[in-house]
Image (cartoon, rainbow, N blue to C red; front, side, top):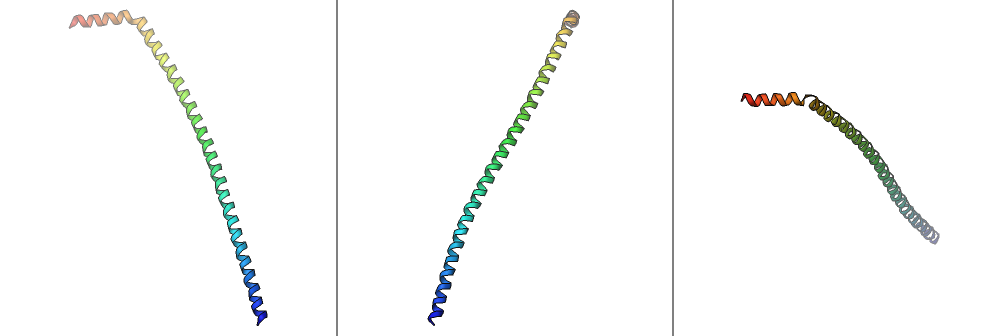
Length: 103
């Protein structure tokens, strides 16, 4: 009978040790899992930051190109208007004068 009690005590001690080991492994796995999540979050944040910076740079480049195009177009239009005025200002003034006189 005592042998059975001793064997049961040994089994209980072994089971207790196994449970303690499992609990420690569980804690270690939880720490590793948390670290993996933090590493993943950091990598995603960095990737997102890089993509956002790339998109921002692309949009700034497009904006600068459009602005340069608009400035060139505006300068060309003003130049054409000044040329037209220079060439036709006398005729335009006569037309305005004649319209005023007809009233």
